[in-house]
Image (tube, helix red, strand yellow):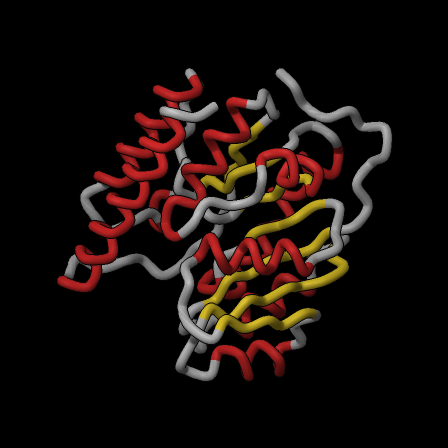
Length: 233
C-alpha cells in the first residue's frame, strides 16, 4: 500500500458542505461542523439553491460561503469548496445531515492520527437508502472489479481525506459519481482507505417518481464513471 508518510502531521481541518435546496437542515449541519474539535473552517458551496439556503448558511456562521449561479452538481460544488479551503485535512459532509454531522469526528480521527489516508462513513441500517439498491450494487461491483478491493459504502458522501492525497488523485468527478470515482482513484494509487461506523442520518430518497428519477440518473452517472476508469489508469 502506498499511504503517506507522517512526517508533518496534519494540523488543520476544513469542512466542505455542498448544498442544494437544503434550507431545512443546513443550519444544524453547519453548527454541528463548527463544534467539532480541530475544525478551523467550514466551507459551504450553495449549488444554485432557490430556497434561501445561502442566507441561512450565512446566518449559521459558515466561514467561507460560495455560490454557483446555477446547479452544477455535487462534484462541481466539492471542487469549488476544495479549491477555496485551506485545511491539511478535508471533511466532506452532506448538507442534510443536520446535528448528526457531529459524527464526522469519527471520520477525522484515523486521518489525523496517521492510521488512514482517507475514511468513508458507514451508516446505520436505519439510515440507509430506500431504493432497490441497484446503484449501490453497481458501485460495489465496479470498485471491486477495477481495484480488487471490496468497499461496502462506495456511495457514502461523508468522508475525510488528506489534502495532499486529494491533490494527487486530481480532485473530484462530476455529478452523482463523485464518490465512486474517488474510491477507485484512491485504491488504485494504494492509499489506505478505512470505512468507519457512524450514527449519521440523512434524508432518504423516497420510492416515488422523483426518487426513481434521481436514482436512475445516479445509476447512469456511476456506470459512466466506471466505464471511463476502466479505460484509464
